[in-house]
Image 1 (spheres, rainbow, N blue to C red):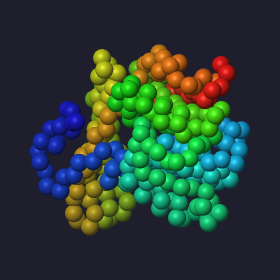
Image 2 (image 1 turned 30 degrees about the horizontal axis):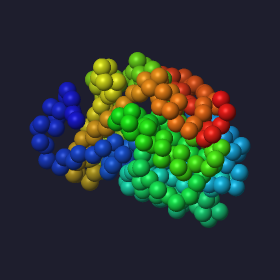
Image 3 (image 1 turned 60 degrees about the vertical axis):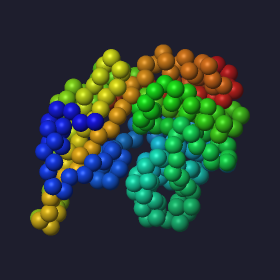
Length: 274
């Protein structure tokens, strides 16, 4: 789970130390602060929602703190968000509660696993963005998710997801075990810093990200260790599984994101024509 200096720090067993996934506890708030302003995918997702959702609701998998949900609701689109992390959903619900009533009523969030859920309705559009496919562990998880998505899509409905096209550049600023840091001075009684690093296993096409944070509030120091796993699926494997499914590829989009390398987005249609 931990590597290098992160393992060394954890082995010290310092007082007031806590372990979290990137999407839990302290790190759910940290993730929101770091990733909440990402917007590369918004134009395509809104375009697809306006063109294909009609009067139906849009489902977002791995919705997190609601970045995309808020954009959709602001454009008059009814949305359902699904996420495994209750901590991320709590951030989303807090943001939702601060919206005007007309926007708040357009958002419905649920806790669940994106590979195996049952919502009792079908959607014209389902999305999985922010390269969240990397949260899956094995190709079989992708196959299972695709089957679950298919069951929840209307005939002719669309599924959109993106992934890292080449992990050679992915998170190049912190990959290979190199450590970066962020400091936050939030006042005399609130000072924080976070160290982060990524170690890749090129043979297994995966990576582990580690985090260490110290938070000093009102004279008390707390230490938060974080770790999360990411999988980089070869494009040919994804396309092979898609080819065995009820989906047809109808559109692609490639983004060159700073610090992320190339991200490719696929638009699939259930029963569509190639």
